[in-house]
Image 1 (cartoon, rainbow over the protein chains, first blue to last red):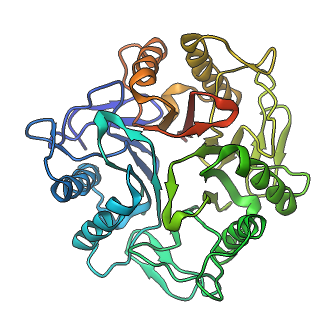
Image 2: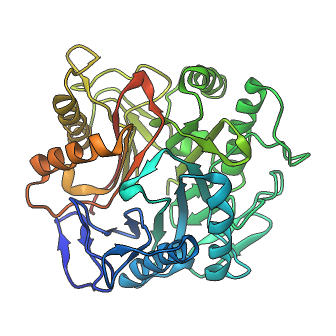
Length: 137
Length: 137
Length: 137
């Protein structure tokens, strides 16, 4: 179903061809039965493997990447069971995430979400989103 | 099964009528196959949509809300697969969460838990709990 | 399948006999249908119930404990759907986690991962790893 899929016999790990390359010991997608778990997505430009410049553009890239990861296994945003959103400044970044989610989801319905301010993200980034998806039979 | 349910064709999102209204682009409950994922629950009073005053009372409200969300889809606390607990002061809040969990669970058994101190929560709150539940066939 | 298993009628909680004792109101493993959710694992020595001394040794113990928890229900590291890694110093601890994961996973494939710097962990620890696993039919 995807290029570069690595079945372990239990779970299949895959890295969508239209996303960035993982830069460490991790994969982007895990598929097991009806569930799909994604690695935390950040605003990395798949063309350059560099972080997108600009807070709004980078936050938009987070959700573009998340949607591409979902689509790589035949799903989409309406399959999301929960988003956990990590930001480094709640006051500055929560409104931005809300705005971009409205771009992607319109009037909803929206998935459950937990939003947290953490001390730091990899590469001194400011927003990361972890998603879990369900594949209806 | 609940009022105000929004099926996407893949996942059903719902907001229990006896809980607070989500104040942003998110739902409280997602149901997909045998799994139920909840948004992070905080100590918001469903009568007023305001945070409960008092650390102990607010922490108790977190678990009251979590239990109502579980019951809204026919489950209860004994269906929880894991709790992830976010507090802003580990030393001050972990004993409080332990105490309130003992009120709700008695002598157990207790679900797996991860407890983390984060820099901040929405509305400068101090405790939030994310739960995932399983619906036995 | 394990000693000390507590079925609730919905979910089964268990504490592997070759791991440390939970020190609070939580269990180590929850099994529900094809899914296994683990509590956040830290570098506690099951022989002494104390934190392992030394950053590298303690990080290795985290993954030893995680693997023991997986094996206690008949699974292993290749069943992991996602790891969420919490560290208290991204610059210092992320390379260490990468190194230890390479010890355990070799050349991969690796599960999806989210890595976050948080303000604090229980017992002033510096690394904790939360894992979710899938049991293939």
